[in-house]
Length: 598
Image (cartoon, rainbow, N blue to C red; front, side, top):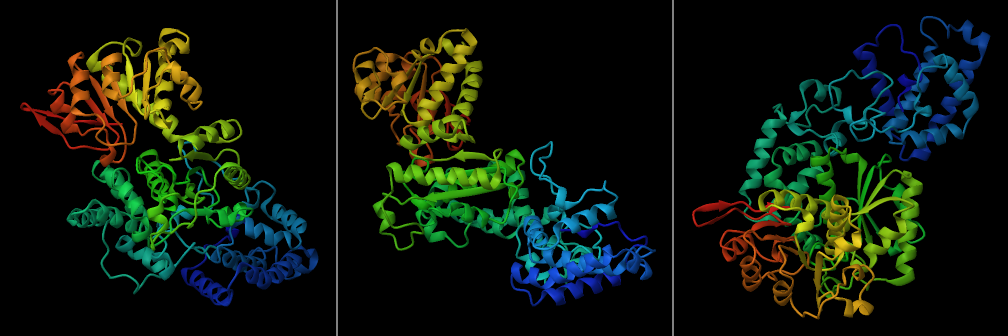
């Protein structure tokens, strides 16, 4: 709460000494306050007295309240109370609540009278989205460490030692001399002042000294928890080098070992223990203007299976990319893990596991828990918050998307996000191979969320381009699951999301036979199982295609259907190849092939 937005400024600029004196006084007064409730108890009487004094017409006039100083006593009292409220992080809602405990009507009418009825006031403000994305910085929180004058009625979100421990505002040695003086940092930092660019070079040098990707991941997470601005500066400027560190493939290993490397929590952990109190848990998160939530229940983390609570690395990593690549403010992002147990026996017996030690709940209990979560998110953050479902198992992913797709702003990255990127990759590949989408035949290994999602989007785009019914377009796309080629004779036993892909054909039991029978021009792997595109499979598709399109999309690298080197070698350098995780360039017959990544 900044009183300057509600009250006209004095005619003369306050001196620096006066500003410091008020800041010291507020610190002294607020020093004994240990909670928001105690703050309200201390300052509400002061507020009430000041409002009564300001509203007392003639007596106020006799004391010079309406003269040159514009009621200095009222201003000083309200400034101290407002600064203390800011100091203790009560925030706008908390301050309004404290006002409502007193004479709210009288206060608001008097404020409007002072402001002339036209000037904006924080009590009237709503969070507004900016044109370029993100939430408007109404209170100046993202500018708290930039060079600016500190007025008597404004105190920063954090100062001194606390500022250095707040990753949102900490700049390390990049704090200027003026900022160190303003924010009480003298003596808390070495005397050297360095630029952010020099800090970036130093951190990158240190990260490159680590031999193991997991060590680099841990170093980046430590940086994010200590200096958020530098973390994103580093990631944006070195995206090709650091993207495989903060996300796949390294994040897969990090999730597997999350309990062992866990030091400080990131995001919200909502477990079955919080059932019936999820809204209260959401309110524990300090940010209120949330735009994007990435949520997982950890049941199908990449191609690694059920990692339970340790799947938190995925929402954290995904939202880092929202900021670095999409420009969404970090404070508008919220990673969440829903802990409903795990069926991973290794984790249940691991002494370092950080989640609930019980089997996963299913059925109605699971559905009720998810419904409470979705309702609480809408109630707390509004209808416009984007909820991204990440790495849910097949049997839940499709149901959640169908159930909440019409009531919430949701999407499933595995079903929809991956599909859009793969379709873009195919369109780009056709510039090399030739032809249109409808002129090619597609064979998928894997018929889960990703496989069926990609297949459906390809069919939709075919239908759009050719004006052909989508059912006809689906006949160009074939899927192989764990039981072989999906055909019409299996329709009764198929899950609902596989049934549209059950075409007329005799039963085929394995991928190699399916390749020879269907003769696809495009082979796509979404199985989550490594080394399933064998040499025989790649040689078979290369035998009837001059430039076969092969996409080994499963993550992380260890679960890719084949490596880049294998694809180029077995196809004799003719494959148009892309993967879900990065692979190094491959040299074959004197030519360097750079695999794509989708």
